[in-house]
Image (tube, rainbow, N blue to C red; front, side, top):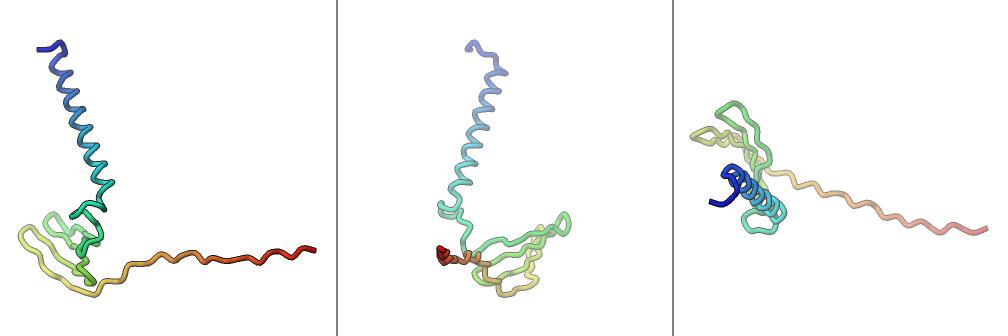
Length: 105
């Protein structure tokens, strides 16, 4: 064996693996919108999810231009209701004003 104690070698190996996990998590969060399959602007997405109890959840999903409310249990999912989705809010652009030059006396 080498001159380093076994516990020190284990701690260094653990630190190395944790560092690799942090680098991978940072890379995924940075490239999330650019990698196929990870893009958040797909045709389907979870809008909101609420836990009712330990076994059941209400999940609101958006699929194309429709929203569906699902009751999801351990072994089943039931459609509660559907309705057209509201269009996403568009941020209003600030109005550009031009001021007339001040008249000189």
